[in-house]
Amino acid sequence: MISKPVIVTALFDIGRERWDSFSASYHTYLWWLKNTLSLDANFVIYTDNRFYYDILEIRKEFDPTMTKSKVIKCTLEHLPAYLKYNKRMEILMYSNKFKEKINFLVPEMTKPLYNTITFNKLFFIKDAKDHNYFNSDLYIWVDAGGLREDIKNFKGITWPNLTILNKKIPKDKISLFTHHSDFFIDNKESHAMSQMRYIQGGSLFCPPELIDNFCDNFNNTVRKCLDNSYIGSDEKIFDILYVNNKNLYNLIKSNWRGYFDIFK
Image (cartoon, rainbow, N blue to C red; front, top):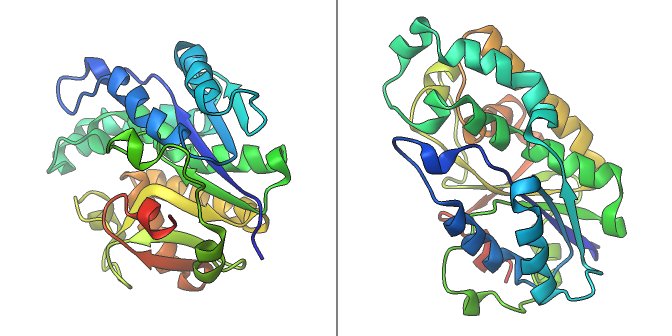
């Protein structure tokens, strides 16, 4: 029986507001994040110096005593994904050989830091687990920009609903949200470099005892992709992880950002 879930999220400055395309204002991201932080839940939030005090003030509005909140300040350059992948992705993604393969000028094909921060979500979860914040029995990743409707749809709601959670989330599998009940991949490189994706990276449900193996598998998969001179978004890595060993994962079919409504 799951009784103590915790939500893990993060917001870091990767220069997105200065991009020529696919840019986004961090004011907008903080507005979206406020929706998530208005939920009645335990939170572990990772951020850098730029957003630390803003996030503290936002969360104090909904958790004045901060008894349900941990805000962890760290630098982008010290994140595990940055140390493991960023330099290799820069070398690969800025190479002419890689650029010749690109069919879509999207961030995961052109912005190494974009991949770096999305690849770190499992390491954020692992850090929260290793520090045993809130003595949690389920770690739930939620993207900072995941909830984009009016705050009245989220403020004060106890989320996730424990009754629904215990019906849908097994303790022996990682739960992932997907557009399809099942899928296969013919060619992993072609899939990684395409715009086809099955698993949504916006939310993951992770029992604590499975997180270390999940991180190891993710890390090994990214390394194999880079060794073979291709890469894709975190969602493509999750797709590959799933087809490599389907027994490790519980797929929940949903629309984009449907995780909130399913567990409301």
